Image (cartoon, rainbow, N blue to C red):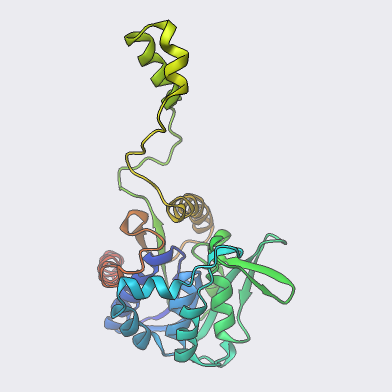
Length: 298
C-alpha cells in the first residue's frame, strides 16, 4: 500500500472521471493523504476529503437531464451564463460548514485571481467557498468576489495543480488530467494550411461561372445566410477554447514537475457541460486509472 498525493485536473463534466479514478486507487489499497484540485477537480476532491463523495455520486447518477438543466440556474445578465447556486445548495447539504483545516487529509482548491493574474490556493477556511471559487468557468459560471479578489476557474493558470501536493509525505503522486489529446495521432506541432475562401467568395465564383458577370452583384446581394453543417453552441465554443488553452498550460507545467503516475482523459470524451454523462465518465476514469497504474506497477 502506498501513501498517495492525488491531483485532480479541470475539465468540466469530464471531471466525473475523477470519481472512477478515486475508486480504482482505493480498490488497490492505496491511502490518499493529500488532494489538490482545480475546478471540477476541486469539487470532486473536496467532497472526497469531506467524506461526502459517495452521497454526491449517488445523487448525480440519479439526476435526469431536465433536472440538470434546472440546477444549472441560468443567469444571462450576470458575469457568467450559469449561477450554479442550486447545485451548490445541494453540495452544502452534503458537506455543511466544514473547514479545510479540519478535514482528515490535506486539501487544496486552486482558483485564479483574474485581476492580479495569479493563482490562489485555498488551504484554510470554508470548504464550500473554496470549491465555489475554483469552479467558476469564465463565461459559463459566474465568478466569485472574495477577500477583494475576483476569482475564477483554477484551471486557467494551473489545470493539473501538482505543486500544492509537493510537500506531502507521499510515496506516490497520481495526477488525473482531463486535457488529453483528442487522438493519440494528433500532432502537437502547428498546422500549416492555406486560408480557405469564405462562403461569400465561393458564392461569387459560382455566380461568375453560371449566370455571367452581369448577374454577379444582384445574386450577391440576395445571397442566403450560410448553413453551418455542425452548429455550435456558445458553451461549445467556450469549452473548446478553454480546452485548447488548458491543454497547453498543463503540458508545460507538468514538464517541470511531472507526477509519478499520469492518467489522461481525452477532451473528446465529453463536452464541458455534458453533466448527464456521469456513469460513462466514472467508468472511463476507473478504466484509464487502472491502465496507468498497471503500466507503472502500482
